[in-house]
Length: 132
Image (tube, rainbow, N blue to C red; front, side):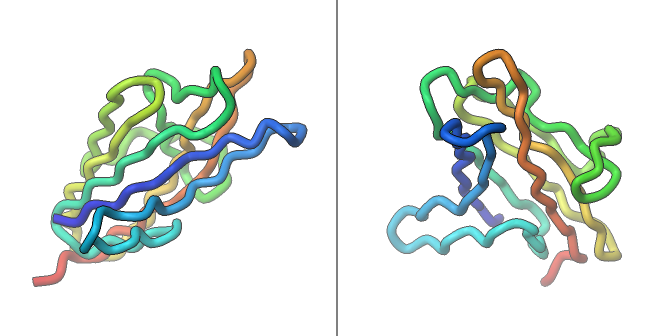
């Protein structure tokens, strides 16, 4: 199983506020998570997300909106191989149960509530057939 840790940062010093998603340094001996888009070849991968931003910035109770293509806001149904778990308004995870036989891109928005508005970042996970 692969584990990838990310920090979601809301920059409220610009208008409109922007979101960046960066790899979080791993524990000693771990590997740094790749930047998005991420290509997954493991059968199971865990992505964790931690909020960083001004006080009041928080993930929505369901912090992910799946989309049809990168940057396209048309909602899509959650792909069946992903499970999203919201721990609290500062942390959530995505479990990726990768069992496909072809390379498939999965586009989504990370949703952050701040100061009465919702902001989003749009990373992509690409599932390649599992290795091994």
